[in-house]
Length: 275
Length: 217
Image 1 (cartoon, one colour):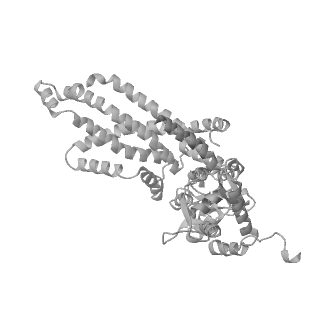
Image 2 (cartoon, rainbow over the protein chains, first blue to last red):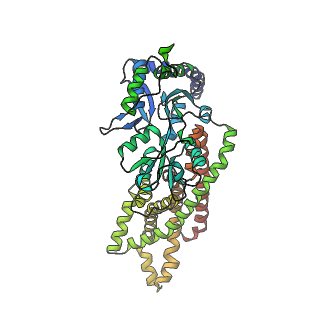
Image 3 (cartoon, chains in turn green, red):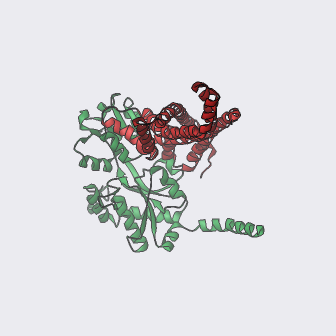
């Protein structure tokens, strides 16, 4: 009996590395279903609508990827993640990739692979109208409280631009929104598309002017996956490239208009028709 | 690539800073609950409205999630105009909930002493005070030490929920590190080990206390 168990263990040790070499692309094709990690509280990128369905810009992207891979946009299963669960989900193979407002940073790229970005996001600061301030500089006052996500870029920006304001670190966009709505915080910082959504839905909130500060710089959100799987990464990266600047650009325009109510950045930085 | 020793070397000091807040919260919560739980247990053992209030309190706080209680204290109080700090809100919510559990532990301890011992004490001509201090209370304390130790351990772990209301405890520090590094395994493994050390200290203290009080059994 013991001998058999040892034999099985030895076989498992040999079999595991062999399996690990199979690309996730082949795994998905064989499984005939794509498993994608998303958020459910970051409108309009990925959120639950009034009917209880998971919808948004990122959700549409995932359906389209499933269509290209498996011929059917419905062959996708969404795994709703919290921010601290997203990287282990990808690294452990629970999801095929993550598509959840994830900003590329150098620190993260050490341990997780990113495709090229599918969206540029800026940062916005949304403030209660009853605070009677208009610019980010006015917010830098110890009498105000400023709510941010516990993510490094937001913490860095707060240190740089708002050293005097009281800080609150929370873990989801909806918690930030709740903090400001309940008066816990005066203002909150969030990705631009999410801020657009909240500002649009709430009359008592407004946008602060952030011109000329690091808040005005662009960040890049990308699909992330387990590193080391070149075939799978290449497919996803190519897919994003085609969407942003190649054969799928018209689709990109349509999603941008549907979810963000504006046009995406141009397909080329130069005027193609002149050359 | 988990188990990156250089990463862990940078991580540990940051986690220990957060652990200070965790320890403060746990000790304060436990100390307050020892007193508050006794008050609730005594109120619950009376007859009449005070007992109903105490009973209702115990049922409500034990049967609702701690996270919701924290949200109510943290966001709700601020809505009606007196916002407490994150630390104070967390402490209050932890005391509200654990007070209910501790009160039940006291009740169990008090009820475990057989009514015959009260009768015997009185038959021996003991005064009420002597009866309690030399017969009942030593037994009660000896019996509640193991469940109180459990409660202390549970409180230590429960403190991690204050991360949701912006308190920089060990869990929050860990979340920030996870966000910046994507190295979830090392960070959460480190956190788990530190919690294990903290709860082991609590459990060892409980064991020591239990041995000291063994005479009462």
